[in-house]
Length: 171
Image 1: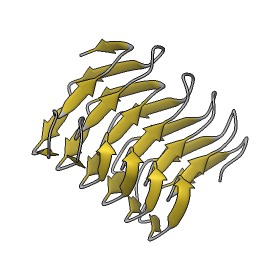
Image 2: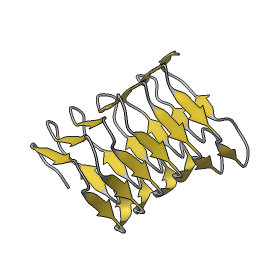
Image 3: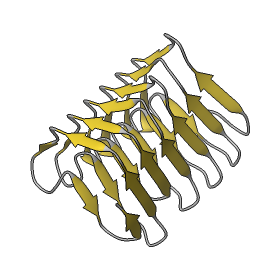
């Protein structure tokens, strides 16, 4: 868990093969001010009930994915295989990198109950057994911005590649 500090992953760094019975298999941002910046490397093959790869679990916590960073092959049993934003004022920004081959019941790639911005992003071959194979956005205060982003080859058992349950979406 990251609390009130900044953690970075770059180059060829790897966070892999971790498990949490609750949230944040790879990374759990647990307090306001906690920041994870991934400009390279892989958050890979992690598992949790929510947020298999990265769980942004506090108001004021944030995750930035850019450069050549990869969120790949993670599993969230419930919500957010790759990334899970769990509070209204949690933040995720993707300006590069890719979210690939992640799976969950809802939001195989990204589950958003906070503030998510995907700009020049790639979401490829993510899977949901329910809705939102690539992105699931829910919560009355949720905000989602998607611009110049590629969503390719989502795997759906039912539902859609992108599912907006509530909140505001600018696509």
